[in-house]
Length: 429
Image 1 (cartoon, rainbow, N blue to C red):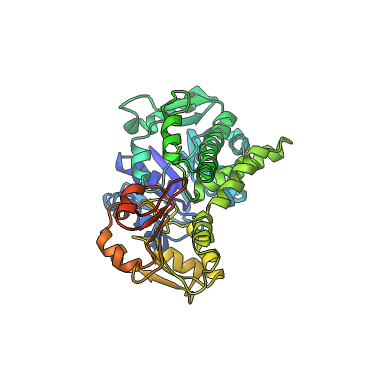
Image 2: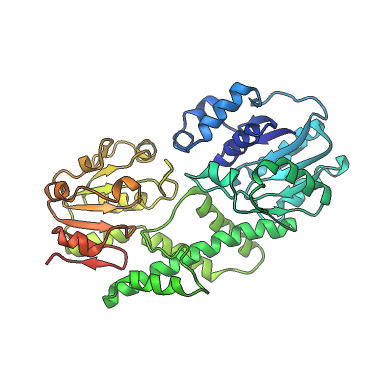
């Protein structure tokens, strides 16, 4: 098929690479960004497979990057929108500008996370051309974008037209052979379902974080609570890991989007407000543990932080817990030595050259040179099995603050460290 993709998000880059990889003829228009800028962006370079597949598709000729050139009339079978929410206002004019190039029987795929009802509104702009629109909400996971697109567990397909459904299935046929991945429903239902899923996941995380706080107060190891809850078949284990807060551009803005939908419908959600508030509080939980351990006397301390990205596998720090943590530490005069495998350029871009920040690009242990504490913020695999003997030399304060509960408290304590996790703790004998 002949496909035109608009957008400069990870979802646009992944769709362009994947669809061209399986033989479609794709024109990618990175709205608001030039390809040379995107190609060297940290988020694309750090995403496994996507950059490589883009280069291969460009070399094969199945992918062309055309930022604003006109297209022949009736030359496009699929118009794919992968815009960011902040580009929502540009979508109608973009669709109208591309109307002439759409062939008879073409479809519009709205892959963007826009407010509920926007797919219908975009379809109305093309009503005189007989073009059907479908909602195919973005389901990518950063750090696993290629895998989640090409081997999707499921796609929410908002579609009210049988012909359009067949067109989408043919477009995505190469990624739908292992099992049926499309769950068809009305357009508005698909748009709301995408937001509702992330709302539920965030609620589970925030609830587990509340239980971790209660466990801390009662002297209970929250790991027992997590395992007990997860073993209940009505609950399961997914997203029951307490931590120091979640972030990420897509997850966070979907929650805000769901809250906006609630507000616009006149049904304000106290629950969502609480979920968002709990998450923001949790982003400073390691700071509060450091404060409690040192009885509020933090000025002049040195702290190592492992991990800045909002999750392993990505270079992004959008709404990441490390940002409020850094601000809280600096406000108390704490010098931070920060290590992350790929996200340090993003940190420098956001915070600049701060006098109380040292970015450490070598081995993780290099951030731990005569520091008073080590904080684990992002659970990169490089951090799971450190050299504890070397840490004894580097972390003179012998304090480990584990924001993701990846270490065994008793083992850490047996190495001579004070361990404080999220709802877990242990002291050396």
